[in-house]
Image (cartoon, rainbow, N blue to C red):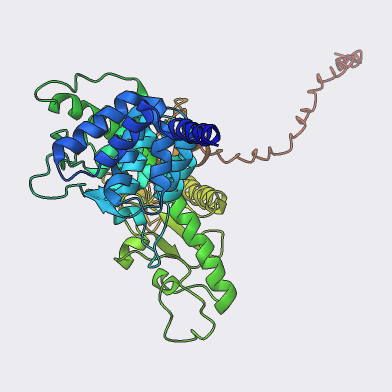
Length: 529
Protein backbone atom coordinates (compact mmCIF):
# COMPACT_ATOMS: atom_id res chain seq x y z
CA UNK A 1 0.00 0.00 0.00
CA UNK A 2 2.79 2.31 0.93
CA UNK A 3 4.51 1.49 -2.35
CA UNK A 4 1.35 2.38 -4.33
CA UNK A 5 1.02 5.68 -2.51
CA UNK A 6 4.66 6.46 -3.25
CA UNK A 7 4.16 5.82 -6.95
CA UNK A 8 1.07 8.05 -6.98
CA UNK A 9 2.92 10.90 -5.31
CA UNK A 10 5.81 10.49 -7.74
CA UNK A 11 3.41 10.60 -10.71
CA UNK A 12 1.72 13.73 -9.41
CA UNK A 13 5.10 15.40 -8.90
CA UNK A 14 6.21 14.50 -12.42
CA UNK A 15 2.92 15.79 -13.89
CA UNK A 16 3.29 19.03 -12.03
CA UNK A 17 6.87 19.30 -13.32
CA UNK A 18 5.63 18.73 -16.90
CA UNK A 19 2.93 21.41 -16.49
CA UNK A 20 5.41 23.93 -15.20
CA UNK A 21 6.25 26.45 -17.97
CA UNK A 22 9.76 26.41 -19.34
CA UNK A 23 12.11 29.24 -18.66
CA UNK A 24 11.43 31.08 -21.91
CA UNK A 25 7.69 30.98 -21.45
CA UNK A 26 8.10 32.23 -17.91
CA UNK A 27 10.23 35.11 -19.10
CA UNK A 28 7.71 36.02 -21.83
CA UNK A 29 4.76 35.92 -19.44
CA UNK A 30 6.65 37.98 -16.89
CA UNK A 31 7.66 40.55 -19.51
CA UNK A 32 4.07 40.85 -20.81
CA UNK A 33 2.92 41.59 -17.26
CA UNK A 34 5.77 44.05 -16.91
CA UNK A 35 4.46 46.10 -19.83
CA UNK A 36 1.85 47.63 -17.52
CA UNK A 37 4.24 48.36 -14.65
CA UNK A 38 3.77 51.73 -13.05
CA UNK A 39 7.52 52.14 -13.15
CA UNK A 40 8.50 53.42 -16.53
CA UNK A 41 11.89 51.73 -16.45
CA UNK A 42 10.32 48.31 -15.80
CA UNK A 43 7.81 48.81 -18.59
CA UNK A 44 10.58 49.89 -20.96
CA UNK A 45 12.78 46.93 -20.06
CA UNK A 46 9.88 44.50 -20.55
CA UNK A 47 9.21 45.95 -23.99
CA UNK A 48 12.88 45.62 -24.95
CA UNK A 49 13.06 42.03 -23.70
CA UNK A 50 10.01 40.96 -25.70
CA UNK A 51 11.39 42.49 -28.87
CA UNK A 52 14.69 40.68 -28.31
CA UNK A 53 12.94 37.34 -27.75
CA UNK A 54 11.20 37.95 -31.06
CA UNK A 55 9.11 35.36 -32.89
CA UNK A 56 8.98 32.92 -29.98
CA UNK A 57 7.08 35.54 -27.99
CA UNK A 58 4.45 36.06 -30.73
CA UNK A 59 1.88 33.41 -29.68
CA UNK A 60 1.83 34.79 -26.13
CA UNK A 61 1.61 38.37 -27.33
CA UNK A 62 -1.26 37.63 -29.73
CA UNK A 63 -3.15 35.77 -27.00
CA UNK A 64 -2.67 38.67 -24.55
CA UNK A 65 -3.78 41.20 -27.20
CA UNK A 66 -7.02 39.32 -27.78
CA UNK A 67 -7.78 38.75 -24.11
CA UNK A 68 -10.96 40.56 -23.09
CA UNK A 69 -9.55 41.62 -19.73
CA UNK A 70 -6.33 42.99 -21.25
CA UNK A 71 -5.88 46.63 -20.10
CA UNK A 72 -5.51 49.38 -22.74
CA UNK A 73 -1.86 50.04 -21.80
CA UNK A 74 -0.98 46.39 -22.37
CA UNK A 75 -2.84 46.23 -25.72
CA UNK A 76 -1.19 49.44 -26.82
CA UNK A 77 2.32 48.21 -26.03
CA UNK A 78 1.77 44.70 -27.42
CA UNK A 79 0.83 46.22 -30.79
CA UNK A 80 4.06 48.20 -30.74
CA UNK A 81 6.15 45.14 -29.80
CA UNK A 82 4.57 43.01 -32.54
CA UNK A 83 5.41 45.71 -35.04
CA UNK A 84 9.00 45.95 -33.89
CA UNK A 85 9.47 42.17 -34.08
CA UNK A 86 8.43 42.52 -37.75
CA UNK A 87 7.44 38.90 -38.18
CA UNK A 88 5.27 38.36 -41.24
CA UNK A 89 2.90 35.95 -39.52
CA UNK A 90 -0.75 35.41 -40.48
CA UNK A 91 -1.82 35.38 -36.83
CA UNK A 92 -0.03 38.66 -36.18
CA UNK A 93 -1.57 40.38 -39.21
CA UNK A 94 -5.02 39.19 -38.19
CA UNK A 95 -4.60 40.34 -34.59
CA UNK A 96 -3.27 43.79 -35.58
CA UNK A 97 -5.97 44.25 -38.26
CA UNK A 98 -8.55 43.53 -35.58
CA UNK A 99 -6.89 46.05 -33.28
CA UNK A 100 -7.58 48.79 -35.85
CA UNK A 101 -11.11 48.87 -34.44
CA UNK A 102 -9.78 49.56 -30.91
CA UNK A 103 -10.50 53.23 -30.14
CA UNK A 104 -9.29 53.23 -26.54
CA UNK A 105 -6.30 55.42 -25.85
CA UNK A 106 -3.08 55.25 -23.93
CA UNK A 107 -1.63 58.55 -25.01
CA UNK A 108 -2.69 57.62 -28.54
CA UNK A 109 -5.31 55.11 -29.65
CA UNK A 110 -4.59 51.40 -29.80
CA UNK A 111 -5.77 51.56 -33.44
CA UNK A 112 -3.09 54.09 -34.35
CA UNK A 113 -0.23 51.98 -32.99
CA UNK A 114 -1.72 48.88 -34.67
CA UNK A 115 -1.61 50.76 -37.99
CA UNK A 116 2.02 51.73 -37.32
CA UNK A 117 2.86 48.10 -36.54
CA UNK A 118 1.32 46.90 -39.82
CA UNK A 119 3.50 49.43 -41.65
CA UNK A 120 6.63 48.16 -39.86
CA UNK A 121 5.84 44.55 -40.78
CA UNK A 122 5.38 45.65 -44.39
CA UNK A 123 2.97 43.00 -45.66
CA UNK A 124 0.71 44.16 -48.51
CA UNK A 125 -2.04 41.94 -47.12
CA UNK A 126 -2.66 44.65 -44.51
CA UNK A 127 -3.71 47.25 -47.11
CA UNK A 128 -7.35 46.15 -47.23
CA UNK A 129 -7.84 46.54 -43.47
CA UNK A 130 -6.04 49.89 -43.47
CA UNK A 131 -8.21 51.19 -46.32
CA UNK A 132 -11.33 50.13 -44.49
CA UNK A 133 -10.50 52.09 -41.35
CA UNK A 134 -9.21 55.06 -43.41
CA UNK A 135 -12.60 55.41 -45.13
CA UNK A 136 -14.78 54.53 -42.15
CA UNK A 137 -17.49 57.10 -41.43
CA UNK A 138 -19.11 58.09 -38.18
CA UNK A 139 -22.86 58.42 -37.69
CA UNK A 140 -22.71 62.13 -38.55
CA UNK A 141 -20.98 61.39 -41.87
CA UNK A 142 -17.50 62.56 -40.82
CA UNK A 143 -14.50 60.30 -41.28
CA UNK A 144 -13.32 58.45 -38.21
CA UNK A 145 -9.69 59.29 -38.98
CA UNK A 146 -10.50 63.00 -38.92
CA UNK A 147 -11.22 62.57 -35.21
CA UNK A 148 -8.09 60.49 -34.63
CA UNK A 149 -5.33 62.31 -36.51
CA UNK A 150 -2.62 59.98 -35.21
CA UNK A 151 -4.51 57.05 -36.75
CA UNK A 152 -4.88 59.05 -39.96
CA UNK A 153 -1.15 59.78 -40.06
CA UNK A 154 -0.18 56.15 -39.39
CA UNK A 155 -2.52 54.86 -42.12
CA UNK A 156 -1.07 57.40 -44.58
CA UNK A 157 2.47 56.42 -43.66
CA UNK A 158 1.58 52.74 -44.07
CA UNK A 159 0.11 53.36 -47.53
CA UNK A 160 3.39 54.96 -48.60
CA UNK A 161 5.56 52.18 -47.19
CA UNK A 162 3.34 49.49 -48.73
CA UNK A 163 3.14 51.41 -52.05
CA UNK A 164 -0.64 51.07 -51.93
CA UNK A 165 -1.97 52.51 -55.19
CA UNK A 166 -5.50 51.74 -54.01
CA UNK A 167 -5.10 54.58 -51.51
CA UNK A 168 -4.18 57.32 -54.00
CA UNK A 169 -7.61 59.01 -54.05
CA UNK A 170 -7.72 59.16 -50.25
CA UNK A 171 -4.17 60.48 -50.09
CA UNK A 172 -5.00 63.22 -52.61
CA UNK A 173 -7.85 64.32 -50.38
CA UNK A 174 -5.51 64.26 -47.35
CA UNK A 175 -3.26 66.85 -49.04
CA UNK A 176 -5.82 69.44 -47.99
CA UNK A 177 -5.54 68.54 -44.30
CA UNK A 178 -3.23 71.13 -42.71
CA UNK A 179 -3.75 69.86 -39.16
CA UNK A 180 -1.03 68.12 -37.13
CA UNK A 181 -0.99 65.11 -34.83
CA UNK A 182 0.30 67.30 -32.00
CA UNK A 183 -0.93 66.11 -28.59
CA UNK A 184 0.23 69.21 -26.75
CA UNK A 185 2.37 72.32 -27.03
CA UNK A 186 5.53 70.38 -26.14
CA UNK A 187 4.92 67.54 -28.59
CA UNK A 188 7.92 67.73 -30.92
CA UNK A 189 7.00 64.49 -32.63
CA UNK A 190 3.86 65.85 -34.25
CA UNK A 191 3.39 65.35 -37.98
CA UNK A 192 1.59 67.51 -40.54
CA UNK A 193 -1.04 65.30 -42.19
CA UNK A 194 -0.69 66.96 -45.62
CA UNK A 195 3.09 66.52 -45.56
CA UNK A 196 2.70 62.81 -44.78
CA UNK A 197 0.23 62.45 -47.67
CA UNK A 198 2.67 64.17 -50.04
CA UNK A 199 5.47 61.81 -49.01
CA UNK A 200 3.22 58.76 -49.45
CA UNK A 201 2.15 59.85 -52.94
CA UNK A 202 5.79 60.29 -53.84
CA UNK A 203 6.66 56.78 -52.68
CA UNK A 204 3.75 55.35 -54.68
CA UNK A 205 4.86 57.36 -57.77
CA UNK A 206 1.30 58.60 -58.16
CA UNK A 207 1.38 60.47 -61.48
CA UNK A 208 -2.30 61.32 -61.10
CA UNK A 209 -1.38 63.42 -58.06
CA UNK A 210 1.17 65.65 -59.85
CA UNK A 211 -1.30 68.50 -60.24
CA UNK A 212 -2.40 68.35 -56.58
CA UNK A 213 1.20 68.33 -55.41
CA UNK A 214 2.12 71.18 -57.75
CA UNK A 215 -0.61 73.29 -56.19
CA UNK A 216 1.23 73.03 -52.85
CA UNK A 217 4.55 74.39 -54.14
CA UNK A 218 3.75 77.78 -52.67
CA UNK A 219 2.44 76.49 -49.32
CA UNK A 220 4.68 77.41 -46.40
CA UNK A 221 2.76 75.49 -43.70
CA UNK A 222 5.39 73.97 -41.39
CA UNK A 223 5.68 70.30 -40.44
CA UNK A 224 6.79 70.23 -36.76
CA UNK A 225 8.51 66.85 -37.10
CA UNK A 226 10.62 67.47 -40.23
CA UNK A 227 10.94 71.21 -39.56
CA UNK A 228 10.29 71.66 -43.29
CA UNK A 229 7.53 73.48 -45.11
CA UNK A 230 4.77 71.69 -46.96
CA UNK A 231 6.08 73.00 -50.29
CA UNK A 232 9.36 71.16 -49.63
CA UNK A 233 7.52 67.86 -49.11
CA UNK A 234 5.51 68.50 -52.30
CA UNK A 235 8.67 69.18 -54.32
CA UNK A 236 10.31 66.04 -52.96
CA UNK A 237 7.27 63.96 -53.95
CA UNK A 238 7.34 65.45 -57.47
CA UNK A 239 11.03 64.63 -57.71
CA UNK A 240 10.24 60.97 -56.99
CA UNK A 241 7.25 60.82 -59.34
CA UNK A 242 8.85 62.55 -62.35
CA UNK A 243 12.41 61.34 -61.82
CA UNK A 244 13.60 64.86 -62.63
CA UNK A 245 16.18 66.90 -60.74
CA UNK A 246 15.63 70.65 -60.48
CA UNK A 247 18.26 71.34 -57.86
CA UNK A 248 19.05 69.94 -54.44
CA UNK A 249 16.25 70.00 -51.89
CA UNK A 250 18.68 69.13 -49.14
CA UNK A 251 20.46 72.47 -49.14
CA UNK A 252 20.13 74.76 -46.12
CA UNK A 253 17.91 76.93 -48.30
CA UNK A 254 15.96 74.76 -50.78
CA UNK A 255 14.01 77.77 -52.13
CA UNK A 256 15.83 77.93 -55.52
CA UNK A 257 15.01 74.30 -56.27
CA UNK A 258 11.40 74.70 -55.11
CA UNK A 259 11.06 77.80 -57.30
CA UNK A 260 12.16 75.82 -60.36
CA UNK A 261 9.55 73.19 -59.60
CA UNK A 262 6.91 75.89 -59.30
CA UNK A 263 7.84 77.48 -62.64
CA UNK A 264 7.61 74.06 -64.26
CA UNK A 265 4.21 73.45 -62.70
CA UNK A 266 2.77 76.84 -63.68
CA UNK A 267 3.91 76.45 -67.27
CA UNK A 268 3.30 72.80 -68.06
CA UNK A 269 0.93 71.26 -65.54
CA UNK A 270 -1.42 73.85 -64.09
CA UNK A 271 -3.09 74.91 -67.37
CA UNK A 272 -3.79 71.30 -68.31
CA UNK A 273 -5.34 70.71 -64.90
CA UNK A 274 -7.49 73.82 -65.20
CA UNK A 275 -8.83 72.68 -68.57
CA UNK A 276 -9.60 69.22 -67.17
CA UNK A 277 -11.34 70.64 -64.09
CA UNK A 278 -13.39 73.01 -66.25
CA UNK A 279 -14.53 70.26 -68.62
CA UNK A 280 -15.46 68.03 -65.69
CA UNK A 281 -17.51 70.87 -64.18
CA UNK A 282 -19.24 71.60 -67.51
CA UNK A 283 -20.13 67.92 -67.81
CA UNK A 284 -21.60 67.79 -64.28
CA UNK A 285 -23.61 70.98 -64.67
CA UNK A 286 -24.78 69.98 -68.16
CA UNK A 287 -26.15 66.74 -66.70
CA UNK A 288 -27.86 68.71 -63.94
CA UNK A 289 -29.52 71.01 -66.48
CA UNK A 290 -30.87 67.95 -68.27
CA UNK A 291 -32.49 66.68 -65.06
CA UNK A 292 -33.85 70.14 -64.25
CA UNK A 293 -35.38 70.36 -67.73
CA UNK A 294 -36.95 66.92 -67.38
CA UNK A 295 -38.61 67.88 -64.08
CA UNK A 296 -39.71 71.45 -64.87
CA UNK A 297 -40.09 71.20 -68.67
CA UNK A 298 -37.92 74.27 -69.12
CA UNK A 299 -34.30 75.36 -68.93
CA UNK A 300 -33.02 77.18 -65.84
CA UNK A 301 -32.96 80.96 -66.05
CA UNK A 302 -29.83 81.05 -63.89
CA UNK A 303 -27.47 78.31 -62.74
CA UNK A 304 -28.50 79.00 -59.14
CA UNK A 305 -31.86 77.37 -59.90
CA UNK A 306 -29.98 74.07 -59.97
CA UNK A 307 -29.22 74.36 -56.24
CA UNK A 308 -32.09 76.55 -54.98
CA UNK A 309 -35.77 75.98 -55.64
CA UNK A 310 -37.22 78.64 -57.96
CA UNK A 311 -39.93 80.84 -56.46
CA UNK A 312 -42.23 80.27 -59.41
CA UNK A 313 -43.18 76.91 -60.94
CA UNK A 314 -41.01 75.09 -58.43
CA UNK A 315 -43.52 72.44 -57.43
CA UNK A 316 -41.80 69.80 -59.59
CA UNK A 317 -38.28 70.84 -58.56
CA UNK A 318 -36.39 67.82 -57.20
CA UNK A 319 -33.01 69.39 -56.58
CA UNK A 320 -30.43 70.24 -55.66
CA UNK A 321 -29.20 68.92 -58.99
CA UNK A 322 -25.54 69.69 -58.23
CA UNK A 323 -23.68 69.56 -54.95
CA UNK A 324 -23.20 73.14 -53.79
CA UNK A 325 -20.08 74.44 -52.07
CA UNK A 326 -20.31 76.58 -48.97
CA UNK A 327 -19.95 79.56 -51.28
CA UNK A 328 -22.63 78.86 -53.90
CA UNK A 329 -20.85 81.09 -56.42
CA UNK A 330 -17.83 78.75 -56.35
CA UNK A 331 -20.10 75.83 -57.24
CA UNK A 332 -20.05 77.06 -60.84
CA UNK A 333 -16.46 78.35 -60.95
CA UNK A 334 -14.22 76.83 -63.64
CA UNK A 335 -10.55 75.94 -63.32
CA UNK A 336 -9.65 79.64 -63.55
CA UNK A 337 -12.14 80.59 -60.83
CA UNK A 338 -14.47 82.24 -63.32
CA UNK A 339 -18.16 81.48 -63.37
CA UNK A 340 -19.52 79.26 -66.15
CA UNK A 341 -21.83 81.05 -68.56
CA UNK A 342 -25.29 79.86 -69.62
CA UNK A 343 -26.71 81.22 -72.89
CA UNK A 344 -30.20 80.46 -74.19
CA UNK A 345 -30.71 79.88 -77.06
CA UNK A 346 -27.33 78.40 -77.83
CA UNK A 347 -25.08 78.51 -80.86
CA UNK A 348 -26.58 75.75 -82.95
CA UNK A 349 -27.96 74.07 -79.81
CA UNK A 350 -30.77 74.56 -77.32
CA UNK A 351 -28.35 76.26 -74.94
CA UNK A 352 -24.65 76.93 -74.47
CA UNK A 353 -22.85 76.16 -71.22
CA UNK A 354 -19.28 77.33 -71.51
CA UNK A 355 -16.05 78.57 -69.94
CA UNK A 356 -14.05 81.34 -71.58
CA UNK A 357 -10.72 79.70 -70.79
CA UNK A 358 -7.52 80.97 -69.22
CA UNK A 359 -7.79 84.51 -70.61
CA UNK A 360 -11.35 84.81 -69.27
CA UNK A 361 -12.32 86.41 -72.57
CA UNK A 362 -14.40 85.09 -75.48
CA UNK A 363 -12.63 82.80 -77.94
CA UNK A 364 -8.87 82.38 -78.14
CA UNK A 365 -6.55 79.46 -78.75
CA UNK A 366 -4.61 76.95 -76.67
CA UNK A 367 -5.48 77.29 -72.98
CA UNK A 368 -7.41 80.47 -73.80
CA UNK A 369 -9.87 78.54 -75.95
CA UNK A 370 -13.51 78.52 -74.93
CA UNK A 371 -14.85 75.20 -73.63
CA UNK A 372 -18.42 74.20 -74.52
CA UNK A 373 -20.93 71.53 -73.56
CA UNK A 374 -21.35 70.67 -77.26
CA UNK A 375 -19.53 71.13 -80.59
CA UNK A 376 -22.36 72.38 -82.79
CA UNK A 377 -21.09 75.93 -82.41
CA UNK A 378 -18.10 75.10 -84.61
CA UNK A 379 -20.05 74.66 -87.86
CA UNK A 380 -22.39 77.56 -87.04
CA UNK A 381 -19.48 79.93 -86.36
CA UNK A 382 -17.77 78.96 -89.59
CA UNK A 383 -20.94 79.56 -91.58
CA UNK A 384 -21.36 83.01 -90.00
CA UNK A 385 -17.77 83.87 -90.84
CA UNK A 386 -18.08 82.76 -94.46
CA UNK A 387 -21.35 84.71 -94.82
CA UNK A 388 -19.73 87.89 -93.47
CA UNK A 389 -16.76 87.48 -95.82
CA UNK A 390 -19.15 87.10 -98.77
CA UNK A 391 -20.88 90.34 -97.77
CA UNK A 392 -17.54 92.14 -97.70
CA UNK A 393 -16.59 90.73 -101.08
CA UNK A 394 -19.75 92.14 -102.62
CA UNK A 395 -18.99 95.55 -101.10
CA UNK A 396 -15.45 95.43 -102.50
CA UNK A 397 -16.74 94.50 -105.93
CA UNK A 398 -19.16 97.43 -105.93
CA UNK A 399 -16.46 99.79 -104.71
CA UNK A 400 -14.14 98.65 -107.47
CA UNK A 401 -16.83 99.09 -110.04
CA UNK A 402 -17.65 102.63 -108.97
CA UNK A 403 -14.19 103.83 -107.91
CA UNK A 404 -12.22 101.87 -110.50
CA UNK A 405 -9.87 100.48 -107.84
CA UNK A 406 -9.99 98.58 -104.56
CA UNK A 407 -9.79 100.58 -101.30
CA UNK A 408 -6.37 100.61 -99.66
CA UNK A 409 -8.02 99.39 -96.42
CA UNK A 410 -11.44 98.05 -95.53
CA UNK A 411 -12.14 101.30 -93.72
CA UNK A 412 -12.75 102.85 -97.09
CA UNK A 413 -15.96 100.82 -97.28
CA UNK A 414 -17.65 102.69 -94.41
CA UNK A 415 -15.54 105.81 -93.99
CA UNK A 416 -14.89 108.07 -96.95
CA UNK A 417 -11.20 107.86 -97.83
CA UNK A 418 -9.15 110.94 -98.33
CA UNK A 419 -8.09 111.94 -101.74
CA UNK A 420 -9.89 112.06 -104.96
CA UNK A 421 -12.76 109.66 -105.10
CA UNK A 422 -15.75 109.69 -107.24
CA UNK A 423 -19.17 110.06 -105.83
CA UNK A 424 -18.69 107.99 -102.61
CA UNK A 425 -21.31 106.28 -100.52
CA UNK A 426 -21.01 103.80 -97.59
CA UNK A 427 -20.58 100.28 -98.87
CA UNK A 428 -20.70 98.75 -95.35
CA UNK A 429 -22.21 100.03 -92.12
CA UNK A 430 -19.22 99.26 -89.87
CA UNK A 431 -15.97 97.34 -89.55
CA UNK A 432 -16.65 93.71 -90.49
CA UNK A 433 -15.77 91.04 -87.89
CA UNK A 434 -15.89 87.26 -88.08
CA UNK A 435 -17.97 85.02 -85.83
CA UNK A 436 -15.22 85.14 -83.20
CA UNK A 437 -15.24 88.93 -82.87
CA UNK A 438 -11.99 89.49 -84.77
CA UNK A 439 -11.76 92.08 -87.59
CA UNK A 440 -11.34 90.52 -91.00
CA UNK A 441 -7.81 90.93 -92.34
CA UNK A 442 -7.59 92.64 -95.74
CA UNK A 443 -4.53 92.69 -97.96
CA UNK A 444 -4.29 94.47 -101.25
CA UNK A 445 -2.73 93.45 -103.52
CA UNK A 446 -3.14 89.85 -102.41
CA UNK A 447 -0.40 87.35 -101.75
CA UNK A 448 -0.34 86.49 -105.41
CA UNK A 449 0.43 90.12 -106.21
CA UNK A 450 -3.00 90.63 -107.73
CA UNK A 451 -6.50 91.38 -106.50
CA UNK A 452 -6.89 91.10 -102.73
CA UNK A 453 -6.92 88.55 -99.86
CA UNK A 454 -9.62 88.60 -97.16
CA UNK A 455 -8.88 86.43 -94.09
CA UNK A 456 -10.49 85.30 -90.83
CA UNK A 457 -7.93 84.16 -88.25
CA UNK A 458 -10.29 81.57 -86.74
CA UNK A 459 -11.34 80.97 -83.14
CA UNK A 460 -7.79 81.36 -81.81
CA UNK A 461 -7.62 84.91 -83.22
CA UNK A 462 -4.13 84.28 -84.58
CA UNK A 463 -2.85 83.60 -88.08
CA UNK A 464 -1.13 80.27 -88.40
CA UNK A 465 -0.40 77.94 -91.28
CA UNK A 466 -0.55 74.94 -88.94
CA UNK A 467 -3.91 75.78 -87.39
CA UNK A 468 -6.54 73.10 -87.68
CA UNK A 469 -10.21 72.70 -86.93
CA UNK A 470 -11.96 75.72 -85.49
CA UNK A 471 -8.63 77.62 -85.33
CA UNK A 472 -7.94 77.21 -89.04
CA UNK A 473 -7.65 80.44 -91.02
CA UNK A 474 -10.21 81.09 -93.75
CA UNK A 475 -9.01 83.11 -96.76
CA UNK A 476 -10.84 84.22 -99.88
CA UNK A 477 -9.30 86.14 -102.76
CA UNK A 478 -10.63 88.78 -105.09
CA UNK A 479 -9.97 89.16 -108.80
CA UNK A 480 -7.23 91.42 -110.06
CA UNK A 481 -9.86 93.67 -111.59
CA UNK A 482 -13.48 93.59 -112.39
CA UNK A 483 -14.30 92.41 -115.85
CA UNK A 484 -14.34 95.43 -118.13
CA UNK A 485 -17.45 96.15 -120.03
CA UNK A 486 -17.27 94.67 -123.39
CA UNK A 487 -17.80 97.46 -125.85
CA UNK A 488 -20.32 96.52 -128.36
CA UNK A 489 -18.68 96.42 -131.66
CA UNK A 490 -19.62 99.46 -133.68
CA UNK A 491 -22.01 98.56 -136.28
CA UNK A 492 -20.15 99.18 -139.43
CA UNK A 493 -22.14 100.93 -142.01
CA UNK A 494 -22.86 98.54 -144.76
CA UNK A 495 -20.10 98.75 -147.16
CA UNK A 496 -21.29 100.53 -150.17
CA UNK A 497 -20.19 98.82 -153.15
CA UNK A 498 -18.01 101.29 -154.91
CA UNK A 499 -20.01 102.82 -157.59
CA UNK A 500 -18.39 102.12 -160.77
CA UNK A 501 -17.84 105.36 -162.35
CA UNK A 502 -19.22 105.21 -165.76
CA UNK A 503 -16.45 104.40 -167.94
CA UNK A 504 -15.59 107.37 -169.83
CA UNK A 505 -16.26 106.24 -173.22
CA UNK A 506 -13.61 107.38 -175.39
CA UNK A 507 -15.45 109.64 -177.62
CA UNK A 508 -16.02 107.96 -180.78
CA UNK A 509 -14.12 109.76 -183.29
CA UNK A 510 -16.67 111.17 -185.46
CA UNK A 511 -15.92 110.26 -188.84
CA UNK A 512 -14.08 113.03 -190.21
CA UNK A 513 -16.38 114.97 -192.26
CA UNK A 514 -14.95 114.93 -195.52
CA UNK A 515 -14.65 118.32 -196.74
CA UNK A 516 -17.32 118.76 -199.13
CA UNK A 517 -16.03 118.07 -202.32
CA UNK A 518 -15.85 121.28 -204.14
CA UNK A 519 -17.99 120.98 -206.95
CA UNK A 520 -16.15 121.85 -209.91
CA UNK A 521 -16.68 125.35 -210.57
CA UNK A 522 -18.95 125.91 -213.26
CA UNK A 523 -17.16 128.03 -215.50
CA UNK A 524 -19.29 130.88 -216.17
CA UNK A 525 -19.60 131.52 -219.62
CA UNK A 526 -17.26 134.02 -220.59
CA UNK A 527 -18.94 137.09 -221.56
CA UNK A 528 -18.38 137.80 -225.01
CA UNK A 529 -16.43 140.81 -225.47
